[in-house]
Each structure stands twice: as C-alpha cells, then as structure tokens.
Image (cartoon, rainbow over all chains, first blue to last red; front, side, top):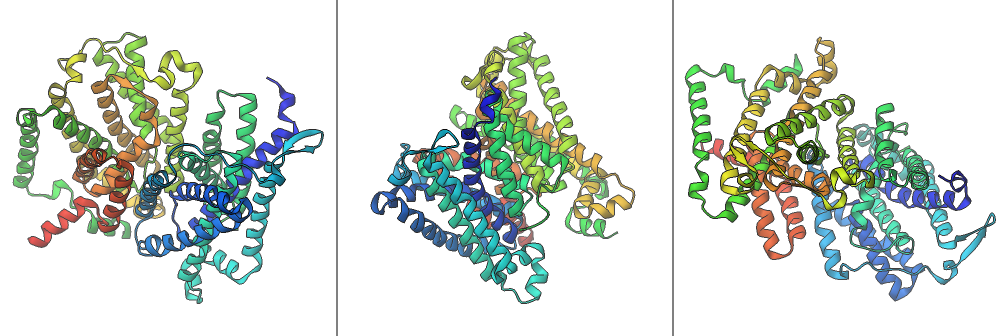
Length: 290
Length: 336
C-alpha cells in the first residue's frame, strides 16, 4: 500500500474530474426529481444519447460546436419527454412513472446502437486541450482540468439561477410545496417544461464532456446511472447542493478506494450509500432544491 | 380510525368474514387447481413450451414476493436480484464445498438467504420508500461485487459462475431429474401454489391489515399503540423468503449460478412482470410474469428484444394503471 499516492495532485484531480461529471448529471436528475417527483431512470440513456450525438456533431462541426449544439438538441428531447411522458402520467404513482422512464431507457439504448453501431467510439479532445499541463509539479491532462472547470462552472451557474432569478425562485417553491406554489399563481406546467429541458440538456452536456474523458460505448448509460442514483439519494432527494457534495464524496471515495484497496473499490459506493442513509435517512441536503 | 376506514374500503374483506360455505368452495378450488396443475406436462408435451412455462412461473414466484411487499407496505424492492442470486450461490457453495446432500443444501440455502434478509431488513425497513428501494438495490450490487471478487473466486467461481454438483435427491428428484422440465414441473408448480397461498393468507390476515394501515398513516398507527417497524420487517422477510424460493428453484433447475443472477436486470424482470400484471392481487404478478416470459420469447425471436420490451413496458404501464390483472377484474366486474 502506497500512502503517498493518495495525496498526489493527480489523484485529487482525478477525483474532481469524476465528481464534476457526476455533478452535472446528478443535478439534472435532482432538478427533475425535485419538481416532478420522478426518479428518471432514463437519465443514463439521455446521457448516452448526448455522448453519441456529441461524437457525430463533433465530427461535423468540431468539439466546441458540439458542446453548444448537443445540449440544445437534448433540451428539445427533454421537451418531448415532458410533454409526451411526464405530463400525461403526472397523476400516476411514482413507481409507475419511474418504470416508464426505465422502459424509455430500454428503447433509447437499442435505437442508439442501431444508428451508431455497438463498437466503442473514441473522441479526441480539441487540439487546445489535447496535451498535458504542469500542475504543481506533475503533468496532468489538460482536458480533465477543463472538465473540472466546466463541471463546477455549471454548478455555480445553476446555483445562481436558483438563487437569484424569478424562475429559479419558483422552482425552489414548487419543489418545496407544489400545492401552495400553484395556489400562489406559479404555472407549474410551464416551469416543469423548463426544468425538465434543463435537466435533460445537462445530461447531454455531460455526455459530450464524457466523450474524450471516457469512451463512447453502448454500456456507458447503464453504468453511470447507478452512480448517479447513489449520488442523488446520498445527497438528499432533489437537493442540488447535497448532490454536489455527494458527487465530490463519491469521486474521492472511488479514487481513494482504487488506490488503497483495488479489489474492494467496487463496493465503496454502496457502502457509502448504506452508511449515509442509515446515519441520515434524508441524505446530506437540507431539503428540496436548495 | 381513518386509516382503517380507508383501508377496508379498498381491500377485500378478510376471508373470515366470508360465509363458511364459500370458504370451503374456495379451498376446494385451490386444492383442485393445485392437483390439476400437476398434470400440465402430460398436456403440454413440447419440452420448449414447458420450459418456457417453468421460467414463467418461477419468475411469477419472485413477482408475487415483491408484489406482496409493494401492495402491503408500499415498499418497492429494486434489489430483488439479491434474494434471487444469494440462495443460488448458497446452494452451490453448500453442495460443492461442504458436500451436503440436496435437501440439506437447499434448506440451508433458503434459511441463509432468509436470515440475510432479516439482518439487512432490520436496517433497511426504517427507510422511506425511495431510499428503501435504493438501499435494496445497493444490497444486490454489493452481493454481485462480492460474488465477482478475485479473493472469493475459489468459492464463487468469479465471473465464470458456479457450476454445481448436486448430490442426493430432493423430494425424490436427483440432479438429472431436476434439470429435466417434465420432472421439475411438479416441484415448481407446488412451490408456486404454496407461495400464492401464503401471500394471500398473509394479506387477508390481521397482519396484512396492520401493514396496510401503517402504509396509509404510519404516525396514527404509532400513537394508536401499534408497533410499525416489526410488522414491516416481518413483511420484508416474508417477501425475501418468497423471492428466495424463486432463486433456489432457478438454481436447482439449471445447477448453475452466475453473477448475472445478482444483476439489476434480473431483478428488473421480476419488477416489470409484477407491475405489468398489477401488484394489488396475488394473481396479478403471476399473470404479469407469464405475459413477460412469453413476451421475452416472442420479442427475442425478432432480434429486437430490448427495444420491444421497452415499448411493451411503456405501453402496458401507461395504458393499464392497475396492471393487466386489474384491467381484467374491472372488465369482469362490469360484465356482472
């Protein structure tokens, strides 16, 4: 066991890179959960769709264009998802809706394989970010630093939106007390359209960002979905701040586990989930969307 | 009491309230169906279809188990796979490494899995429904990771799975007879009937009433002097026990356990089957499981298994809020 490895800058940055990817995904999931009370099992599939779309758009127009275009495309998908699935089913039990989203994931998966094939694709980072940079004396891939920056930038933007804008305030209000908010004249349907679009667009953004970091392969959605669900539940259902904290903890536990106990690292996230939920059943967060 | 009032409105009356004559008739029908079912292999001579039906009713057993927990307690077990895979692995480990004969190995596997459910249940039934679902999912994933651990490879076979050498005979069936569909059928059928009876009986007893009342308003039950955690734990253990029977049957039939048994997808089959059939009755999950198994076979033949399963799940759940069984019952009642 080499303890010194644990405190290296590279490991720290690795944990942050994983955490920032999870944060983007989990905050979208938490937003949708907060507003619609729906655990979206299709989130992993939307992320995969984003990654594949990012691959294609990136080939045509370049990575930077993909970073803008794909989230917009996924926002349109999100609008369809809200109007065609969530809204008609909003009176049904949570489990029913969750299972419908699970069914959607089953549909999106093969559809994506049909279009792009099942061979893992690799995406090159843009030339500016292709190399490594000097980071406190160690060489570190520039792309991962970019990923960390975008991840936490997105979180800040999201927090700012929730805190300082009218629609953000409405979102917090509806998440806390949907009935009261509606009585006070908040149009929850319009708001939920906005929030679901945003959540799915975030999944698309995460997909594009994941391209050069991980590889684009058919199993990517399913494997990250469970991590994401753990992050959202550990963070406190529907809590954005909690989700960010949980993603950080998750990233560190995963990386530390891989360094110290490689054979047991796969168990670490589940132990985290168990530990946190037994200690604090409501998760890290103080409440809905805060 | 409001909770009990709403409960009696939605739930059928307990069996004890039915007149004695109707109760005897119900018993007669139940025993008759159980006995008649034993002769299915004589009618259904195609080994393939019988095998499919066996898969259907074994999946049905698991679905009945989770349907019970969902309908009585409002808790959905995402990690059904934990209690499908665990007894399978235990059976393999007991017969391969301790050289136990079939009856002892099977009984211990069932016992071990149920004991595991009791231990973990004591922790997880305190959680609210969604965290509960996630905790059980984590449980299944943990078991899956443990089964594929390199250190446990001699015991579990790692990613390759565990091929079992079963010795002795269970209810007169040795390993060879267990692997044949026609001779395995009676075991699976009787297990299904027993499980459905247990679930039905438990749902229509005072225990079931307490569970449903707790689900409706836990706080009120608590200050009415009811303990709310113990009954829920008991329900969880019962549900896990029923699912374990399904896992054990799968392992007995195939003499093989693999990490896939512990995968989320395995539990997903049972979960989808239960919701497609409808969890409100004992028959719903079974109907769902039969439909699901049939669908998997039909869709698998086209080569678009996942796609068609996804579409079917979305359509079934969107179109039939009470599941297929609820729809049939509504149709039947309207006709009357």
